[in-house]
Image (tube, rainbow, N blue to C red; front, side):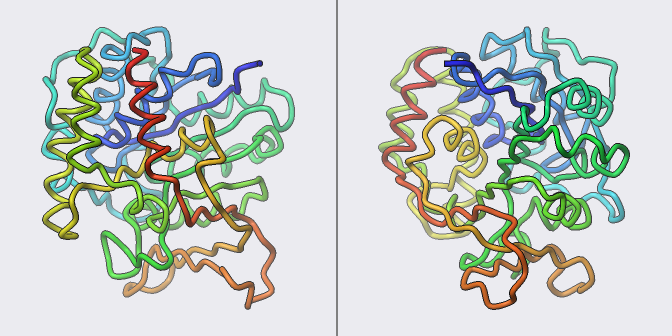
Length: 313
């Protein structure tokens, strides 16, 4: 089997960090062409550093890491230190990573890599605000046919919002970028809160990750132990939802996920509902389908996959 070429665009964040480790553990399935970083959960100077720390921990210092956009396209940056801690990956040691930061801008790397590729050949995996992806599309629209699929974390329907009453964080941070991406015409699979809130890191699942006993297992356990505290208090749940790794898990085991082809439109005008994802689940608008909206996850299967892969590193 030929590994699927992907570009990961992220804003680590503990859940982005776990997503990276999961992707690192599947080299036969995923050919990671590069990791691009964006401001989101924490500012860009921290997200690029955190991605490089994960490359160190996961033994993937061969993967190029790039820094991208420092703010959304039109709005001031909104971050989430209350969830992720001041570093973005509180729970692990912070240090100056050995994995280098490449000098090229994330948007330039995305454009150059896609332009050099065959049509419909590269999958984009964005797990933060969509600023880098949208900027690349706006600057060089000819990259769009090169995209095989976009598998992203963002949005909400039945679950409402987690950073406003109606908006999920990634989309609310840069709704104008989300509008561009969801309108680009390429296949999109979206892991919104409807799906990711089913993937809860219970004490039993967290213990299984800790029991791996490796540096990777300990790092994953300690980050999740910190990360869970906020969502357990917020939702009154027995653990925190693990959002971003759902994207990579879908690439590795799509049968764990159930989706429906729908139209998704992004609210960019209303201060009250800015960043809302209007998911036409029952096809009442007549707008063309543009998204495979994931609404059901086999959570036990997901955590089995995650734990087994983390044990490989």
